Length: 482
Image (tube, rainbow, N blue to C red; front, side):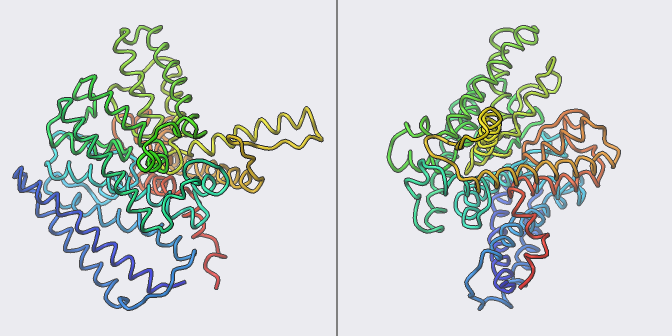
């Protein structure tokens, strides 16, 4: 393990991250909200720490190994989220406590979108902007991590998808080098953000709200500049734009790369993962809208608007709101919340277990049923037209087992702090799936959760964002042996 090289990289990352606190200073000066000093102090502490890590190790140039990659991937989110919490603790009389600031920062960078803040409408503009920017940076980091880095470590949904399943990613190879791939993804991500920003402006948002919401929409984050989220605008055009960009961002960015390079869209319908997600959302929307109509929850038009928006928002793990779905009748709150466990496609900014894993789990389940009927038959699991090797099937079941085990342990941990069952399982599920909204006592915000429960949920956000194994491998003795 190249400890000094890792420290050098972390030092560089911190110094680069400090630059992201400059735009909020400009926003603060523009709006004269008086919070600029919080970002200035944050920059000073972050740069100083980065220099202390970088300078003693600046000449270290060893080639990184897979083991180093796991540490850097885990430290990237952990360290940046911790330092990202500094401005949230320093902006004035309404500044957050250490626990709440760390929770909000992790929620932003992991694009979870859960918040401990009430009265978002009254926060300084620079803090509002900073929360949205955290999600945007986190979303970009997720795409690069999922498409360019985790597959090289053999971890994550794209690792399965890239090596064994044909499609746009494997056919195009994106680009031959990680740096070039990251650059291409940056262009696509920035272009989507700019397009979303312009669309929001044309639909009636002012430039500040349009910028902030374009950041969190493309990142599938869910943070808003208002307590009422997208519902604050009560604008059908804005809701439709939001739904469109949540869908686009829930697809693999490798598909967007092919669309950008080859100027065609047919591959979206040929891709088994994207096709499954579209059909899943269509079916869930149909059930939700009809249920809202039959129970007279809304009239025909509003039922369609709210049903479509909440389904796409929750199922893609964005977490925006135009209505409080937790008070909808019957099984709808539970049904929508469980949909978030599916999440987005591999290589997207969405959370959840990822669509490709759900497809493989379903197909393996069907294979076991067929084996009961035909014990001697050799039945292959196929995605598209290609058979999936048993090794991939075992990896998916391994992920699912770890997911369930961790969910259970964290659920017990949160309940042990005095939280009721519904609130506990929904907050743990929301954090682990990087969703944001929850049911029960946390349906409005997480501010009243016990301190220990918030720290457990921070760990859940990190586990969910780094696809579990990237973190778990660090706790195995074999990882640290020479």
